[in-house]
Image 1 (cartoon, one colour):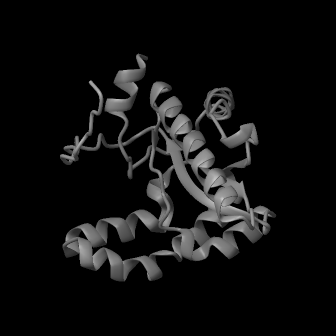
Image 2: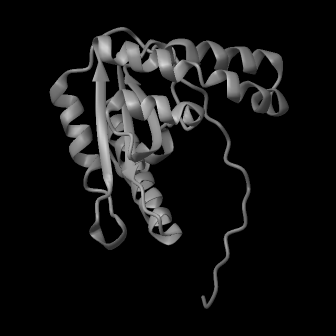
Image 3: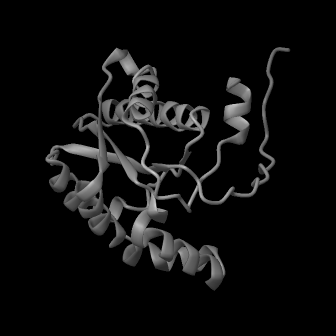
Length: 189
């Protein structure tokens, strides 16, 4: 798949088929993710790929984050959209795989920012590779209110939970969301 097509076609999927994702496909996606750039080439990330019972236990913890997220959702969206997001959180749309991305903690704020940005680059690579493999994903940070519990479950209590994504074959094609107009500044051209 052409990179530009992958970038423009990638969507946040919230409904998945129960069909398992072959491990070889997941390995290709992870390999592509690991080629992300990182500040001073520290590669400060950990990926945890969950399926089966570990996935279900992890999702049970993650789903509790909707309690903290709902007031914010009510400020942003109508009741129908809030209900849709709440339903999605219950089982992450039925995706058979969940990938958690964590980064190292750094007491220096500049170092921590570099780790977060490096992890975000890895996450973007992961989403684009999944798109190229015909899989749906959804970059999720709304689970952060359960970070401590999720990191304990992963056995990584000393890490920073960057985000998670469900991964699977999409059961419903999400609509194209228009891009908001933002200024792009060109200097010296």
